[in-house]
Amino acid sequence: MSNYTKPTTPEDQTSSGSKAPDMVIANQSIFRRQLIVAGSTVAIPVIWFLVGISLPFFINIPWYFVLIWATMHYLGMIGISVGFHRLASHSSFKGTTFVKAMLLIFGSMSAQGPVIYWVSNHRRHHHKADKEGDVHSPYFTEDGHKFKRKLWGLLHAHTGWMFRSNPSNPLRYASGLFKESYVVFVNKNYYIWILLGVVIPGFFALAIEFTFMNFFLGALYGGVVRLFTVQHATWSINSLTHMIGKRPYKRGGEATNLAILSLITAGESWHNNHHSFPSSARLGLHWWQFDPGYITLKILEKLRLVWDIKIPHKKQIAITDN
Ligand SMILES: [Zn+2]
Ligand SMILES: [Zn+2]
Image 1 (tube, protein in one colour):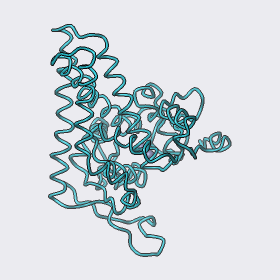
Image 2 (tube, helix red, strand yellow; image 1 turned 60 degrees about the vertical axis):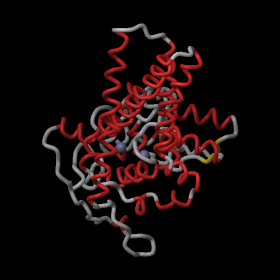
Image 3 (cartoon, helix red, strand yellow; image 1 turned 180 degrees about the horizontal axis):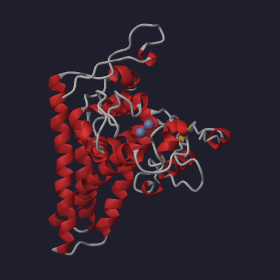
Image 4 (cartoon, protein in one colour; image 1 turned 120 degrees about the vertical axis):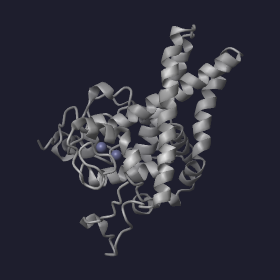
């Protein structure tokens, strides 16, 4: 474990001139807890994913389980992309409390940590972006060691960071979220949302055919296999879209646009665009850049459930600064 506690940049000073809280929580017992929670939430879906893709070779699985998986993957990914990322991390739109809470609940169902933990890490990632102090850069460890091999960097950015980096300090990065009661409510009941995310698709399948086997398969494909796919789709943004792909905007730094991942990540893979315009609710900035998260927001806007969606001006988008 590293003990990175070195606040150095001018951003580390608050507007009143006083010193900002540390970037990380360098506490052994909290770090150990992160290891246990991360270890189980990464390992359990991997095991059940392997079971899930092997089962069709042994038993007949009805086609609608693909639909149950796809629906749950979409909801989970929207929860992460639109809820945790575009809303909670970047405040890129406004909406009714009910819709905002539902988005955060869908995000929590993906077992990537409670929303305040997730947002703190993500804001530190933007703050330090591929420099010393970044929580999950494929180029540097948190305490500034450069990776000698690309593969080690890739693995660190994907999942390894959860076992090496200290948790980001929410008092430094997400103090405003403690004032939002719906965020605190969703954050506090984190494990309930994970459990619901597994049993609800089981009940869907049970409604189609009332057998224990159907409940099990629903919970397996819509629950745990879906956990695996949403987690790795999200983490590929930390790993792949900081290494492979196009960089139309220089100010996007190492972040890349990777079109092939746009469907499975709900548009998150327009990551160079995102690092260039972090508060934009639209990540696919052109009509040909498929962005399911933004399409979902536009539908919610038509239903008057969200409003004030932030997007950059056409002139800003046109300046690629390369
Ligand atoms: Zn990034
Ligand atoms: Zn972001």
